[in-house]
Image 1 (tube, rainbow, N blue to C red):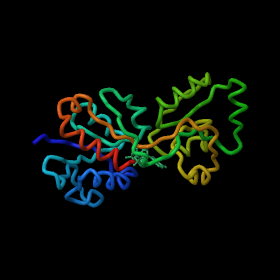
Image 2 (image 1 turned 90 degrees about the horizontal axis):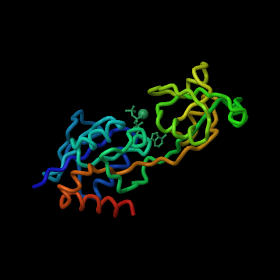
Image 3 (image 1 turned 45 degrees about the horizontal axis):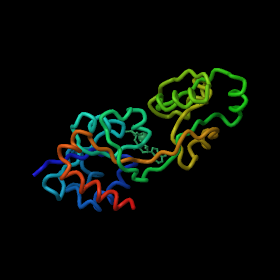
Image 4 (image 1 turned 45 degrees about the vertical axis):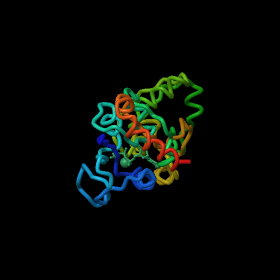
Length: 213
Ligand code: ATP
Ligand code: MG
């Protein structure tokens, strides 16, 4: 029987992923939330799950170490999507990629003036493309987390970050000043695996598509 490996991350996406897997008839043998195992077997003898960092999911699928994966569009845009087929928007882990700045910073004015802006972000590719499209000159400063801090201590004028409720921005006296795009999680498939293992992969894709509706 054809072996299928699915790459998942534990963080925010996981909770919403389990019902979709179940709809596809796939259930982990161990509780992924509690287990420290990185490879989980499932009720289906030929399907296993691997647990990786959210931003590493596209890499495992790109190189074929996993056949399928679930990744945020943010992560996919930063990765570039090479070698990946992205057939399905799962509509989970929905949020917005935003530009945010201190409450007292006049972002529109700075942009109109043609000021050069310092932008701190984990999402360098998305930010670069956004400001290039707007014709705004920026210096991008790569961070790995806690972006909200950067404008408060003078590291940057503004940040590019994911926002859902806006509570973290508010708690740090920041406001969203521009929406870059909506973000949700996608099912991704290794392009070569889809051709070589189509009969095993297609039913999983169909079940996910049915579960998303
Ligand atoms: P790590 O926490 O391991 O550094 P990460 O921050 O990318 O990695 P998560 O915080 O679990 O991992 O985020 C996983 C995905 O969930 C993101 O890539 C994004 O698509 C989505 N996500 C992130 N923040 C939010 C949010 N506030 N609301 C909804 N979805 C979000
Ligand atoms: Mg995180």
